[in-house]
Image 1 (cartoon, helix red, strand yellow):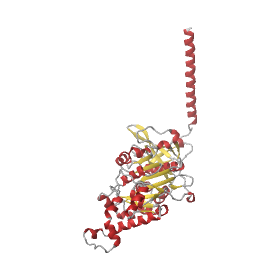
Image 2 (cartoon, rainbow, N blue to C red):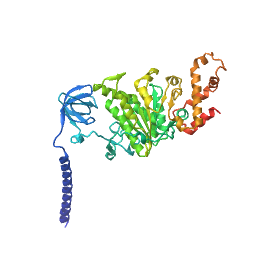
Image 3 (cartoon, rainbow, N blue to C red):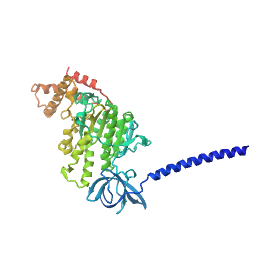
Image 4 (cartoon, one colour):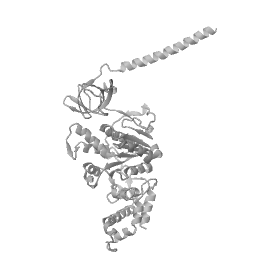
Length: 467
């Protein structure tokens, strides 16, 4: 009896194993049948920096490719993207160093594009991105598990009809007293932060990311030093700030093409959450590095420089990126802050700085003079402006903010006379009052990194100065 039962169960087990094997074979056969019978590839004929010239490969701009290379006797691949054409040849820009590439190396389209030549690429979008640090391709940099393939979708950049934009009517609470009261920001506004190195730009951005009243924060760290990326995430943003944020990092050591894609990807994430009716804060640090990456790619393709080394295409790419943010009818909002690097006062006439000031809805200028005095945040109130501020605040607050700036300007213009005792009291009533309450004005503009000042309390403190 036991022998019969044993044979019976062995038979059932063999049937199950055979069924499982048949299913695996069937699945494998389907994959084999779905493979293309023809693989298109070209041959590498020349290389100039990170630009590869390929013959025999017909692919549209934006297509992803892989190029053979030999390292330690093994044939490996590097990835590149089609960026242009030269007569009958195709020009690719490499995502990696070109070490190991050899003449005549085969260049393949990626497997998903062998038949369709599609230029669309899949990237992860969704609520799963919150709290994550990713690169420009959506690959985790934080050591956590990879994202679920179900959240990957095709990236499409859509333009916005200007008549479909909602007006900016609501105040955005940034948690920073000087900005809330004197440079009030509206939901959907686009602001530039102009700063040179070492005067507290990253700290200011970290305070905004932690304290701003937004549903989701998207941070694009473009072209920054790798050490600064880790320091910003761990020490400035912190665990609480990261929990509602998505960080896209493309440090200075990655390909310029990846830096460009990182800025676009960060904007795409902001667009996704905006369409989910969320109020999004987008921080891109920095727009200057993005422009430099665009310049490097354009010059490598032979485009001529027209202004201080920048080719004309750069001046169209920046507005295209910025115009993807703002308010949209029937959706949420994207309030965006873009940092612009300046090394001196003369750099304010740099073509990128000049362009950004003309197309953004305001600018916050950081001053080295204030930073050297230990005055943080080192915001130069005199030269900073929010263009939508008069439309979203009360007349009383606006008048007080204008008078506050007038006092600051009057004192700073006569600072040397005051310091040497050459100013005669009574000569200028505005300056007399500025001297009298100067310590109060300075205290109002200063704020510790760990301190949060909401919009209502900021306006209340401003009002108390002039009671």
